[in-house]
Length: 300
Image (cartoon, rainbow, N blue to C red):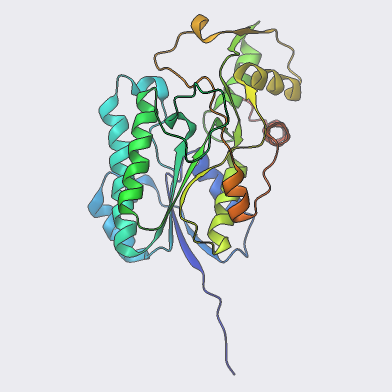
């Protein structure tokens, strides 16, 4: 009798302990018959700044896909910690890209809307010129360039305003402040789109399962457009927290790093290539808050 065994694609996730890494673990557990064999190594055995360690891991595991969720994401701190931000966001990405090229693995690299200047006032496509206005965005762009130069097979996915039930993020911070403060001021003139990290994780799984080899740069966020102020108002509305929230301008709320004023991204390409349906941002936010309330995990 002839026995046919379905091939399982091997996937290594770098930055597995971070927000998106934990969401990928969740999605992988809920998708047992995906044809993907997952490995979520701890940083001690998968440090993207240790090429020899990484080479041993690639040699032993021989992955088909590598997902790079590891990043330096402290936007304001990066302005004074340039070397560390560049080391993680550029050099670490290059280390993975070189090994993916060497071993024939496909690299899924997570980037950001902060590679854009964000002053055009129009929705940004993958072909629009990247022009970062802060160190975080610059080092992430340098990471993209390293991936394109050395990976061979890669998907660079730019995302924005990432949040989830895991880690520290805007949603959990607002929920905490909503219980600690009598009132809040939130910036109203920076416009973008929130992204539920569970939705992004599901998108990555669909890309790997698709068999489509449309390598290159893609944009992914939830559907819709909002400001940080309206995002905060939606969080409090859905969580039934009654707190006065006042809109302020960027000039009134000065931060160490400059942020893009308008970084809404066009997702037509990723939807068409991978036949994706993307949820509306407020619908996904409602799901996240319901999960946080059910687990009594409403603070960062």
